[in-house]
Amino acid sequence: MTGPSRAPAADGVDTRAPMAAAAPVCQPEGFTALSSVSVAAWRALAEQAIEPNGYYLPAWELAVNASARGRTRVSALAAWRSEPAGALAPVQPSEAASNEAPRLIGLLPVVSLWRACGIPLPALASASPYGTLCTPLLDRTLGEDAAKTLMDEARLAGAHALVLRDVSIGGAAMKAFTQALRHHSLRPIVLHAHLRACLDARRDADELLRDALSAKKLKELRRQRNRLAEHGAVRFTVARSVDEVSRAVEVFLALEASGWKGKRGTALFQNEGDLNFIRNATRGLAETGQCEIVTMHVADTPVAAAVVLRHLDRAFYFKLGIDEAFSKFSPGVQLTLDLTRHLCRESVIATADSTASADHPMINPIWRGRLKIGDVIIPLRRNDPVVTAIHAALAARHHIREVARRALNRLRAS
Image 1 (cartoon, rainbow, N blue to C red):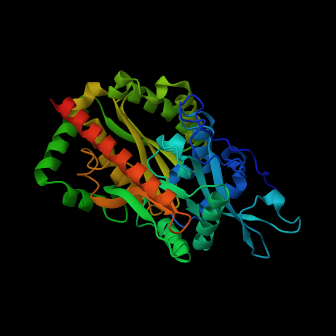
Image 2 (cartoon, rainbow, N blue to C red):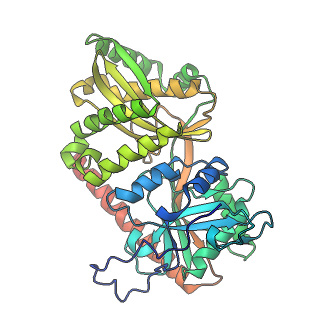
Image 3 (tube, helix red, strand yellow):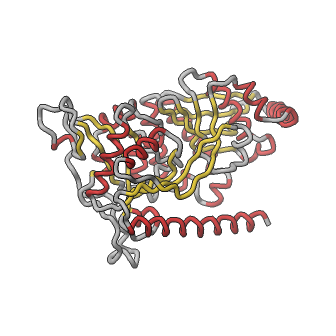
């Protein structure tokens, strides 16, 4: 098996920023460009991952990296295991002996902390995959070794810390990093965390919905559905094949652009790079059976559609678009109810991550499970004052952003 050699870092400091030239940021010149990682090796790792993350599947993240607004030019931390000798080293397959078969056991797309957060300190942050989950892919049998090697890669590049953004705090990947840190008398630093909605898809859907929603709320939703049906037969469809997904994503894009996102100019359809990303990503994942687009129709009119990713035993609810002409019938909620029933019927799916914000008003009352998601600093050296500075800078940034967010919410509510 052959693979890419090390390439210059795709991520760099924005030279237009006034502090960029003098800032002591981590510029990983020896890093692998994400686009040069072997797709076959990446797919093999994803099939053996210790914890699912649909947003770091190769078809999705490479499409993000190719064109998504503000998310291109990403680098990679990669951990390879040389077979059959079993030696772990932060090397690319082309650097291994010709009689060995190196295997990818860990992967984390990264950018500099300057690019991720505007903080000019030597650290690396997990790259945003457009979805709010950046859990690294680690081999389920070698998770701790993979985490250690990823940290070694970052340390060799001059980073003092790794910042894992939007990571599952209690997940298996985070536990692997915690175990690897203990060997150096280190521990992760949780910057902040929140709970977000998830679905226990192993339960009976109707029982789950009865437990989640009051009898009064369920009666109101049935009434809305019946009124919706007065405009035509209500159908729930699931696009799975490449051709079906390619057609359905256009419906989703049109619905998303027709609503408030379109009015704000943030719909995927309104940016060429984002548009290319979502078309390529959904098509690529459909080729491996890892993407579905669910749509609710009233007669021949689509009134709601959503993109759903699948990885191992978990689904990921990416985005929802609705026709606001039908908003009084709650088409987004109606679609989510049908999606809940659909996922609970799937024997392969155990859980579904809403990937929504904390306290999301639509999904939280329906999906009552909770995942703890947060940002975590992985220190790479003991008693490092630079890590203390990174922690303080990130904490201050989070506080400022929270104050601004609350002020904006109050302004919108007034």
